[in-house]
Length: 196
Image (tube, rainbow, N blue to C red; front, side):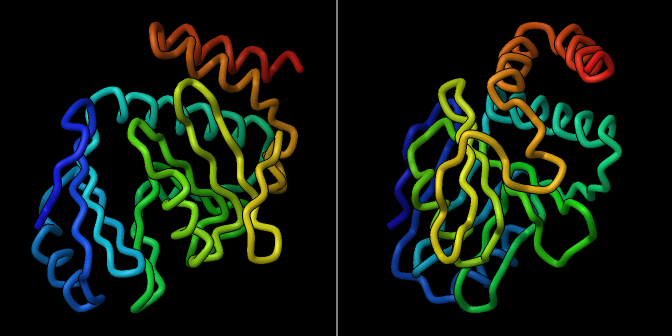
């Protein structure tokens, strides 16, 4: 039975007890449904239908990260919410994701905007994929987890080349500023980068 949780602002549907084959059939059936994010891990399917506020923060964070990487002259490849999979085990779609330094099959950085619970479950999915770093934006705070061995450790700044110089407290202030005036926040962020 499908269960709908937290109908606003995001909607999530969970279904347990599915095989990988079941998941792939559902994925194929929903592939034309734009805006849906599908994840599968350990027999559980999650379908996320992001709300307006969720998508607003995804866009803001993505723009600020790409601005930072561009201004720092760091090679990056945005992979947005591309499907990240290990056949038969796990499939997920980050809100934003990036390859840094060189293009790769799976990104170096995955970013999740969380308005509902489940960030720890999501971290397990990324560990199975061996994604080097995962950022969670939740309740106005940015939490960074870097994969060390086979566990994620929470860090006060990124450990990825190029992003280690990004002051995450300052970055978070610009994200919050952009919620009310994105243009002013983006201009101020770019100017701060040029001045430093």
